[in-house]
Image 1: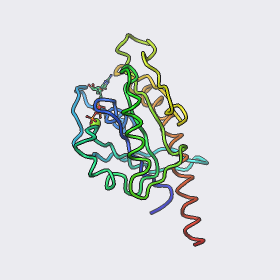
Image 2: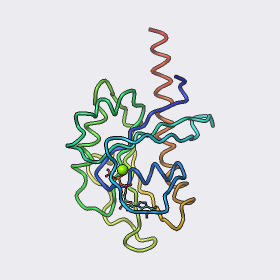
Image 3: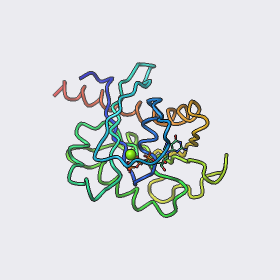
Image 4: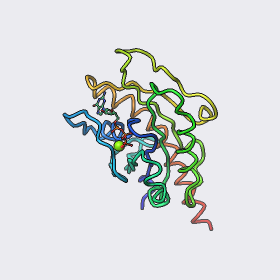
Amino acid sequence: MSTSTVKICVVGPQEGGKTLLCKLLAEQLPADRGYHPTKGLRIQEVERTGPGGIAVNVQLRDCSGDFEAYSQCFPAMALDMDGLIVVYDPDEEGKEPELERWHEAFSTVGDARLDPSQCLVLGIHRGRGGEGAPPKFPISGKLTKLPNAVVEVSGDDVVGSARRVGVEVDRCVQHAVTRKREAEENRLLG
Ligand SMILES: Nc1nc2c(ncn2[C@@H]2O[C@H](COP(=O)(O)OP(=O)(O)OP(=O)(O)O)[C@@H](O)[C@H]2O)c(=O)[nH]1
Ligand SMILES: [Mg+2]
């Protein structure tokens, strides 16, 4: 498989916005904006821009937020993973322990050893506090050592929301491509 294909797991608590993020990137938002929990895993392919402007085929693995139900499947879900996005709702208080649990579980699952640069902790702020209101609970604790951001998402501005989400996701994609290429170089050199 070419190094310009990367696999990124999208994980985090239920109703955090994982499927919303993936659909925004694929410009596939349904008319019905309700919450439909993901069962197991959904794969969404999107094309993004990598280092040096190359086209990168990104396989997003949109995982269920039901940790207990699927933890046995995490090694399979994370197979050949090149990057990890932990998604959360920044209007929810006290989510850090749960986010750390997701990061811990996926960054070390199977033979995955993700470098912090290959991870992203992403708050999907759906602006329930009113248009433009800042998120109520910014991230705190050791997760702040990882690349992290909060993006504003609004159903009235899908194009702008997709662009804002894309800027953050592309950072993760670029690191994922670079690390995958380095791993391939090392493998070829034995
Ligand atoms: N503002 C806005 N909210 C949306 C839209 N589509 C879905 N939502 C809401 O976003 C929230 C998050 O939904 P999902 O992205 O499906 O959550 P998830 O993290 O995938 O949840 P699980 O699959 O159960 O782990 C739900 O409350 C949806 O109702 C949209 O287009 N705009
Ligand atoms: Mg989902």
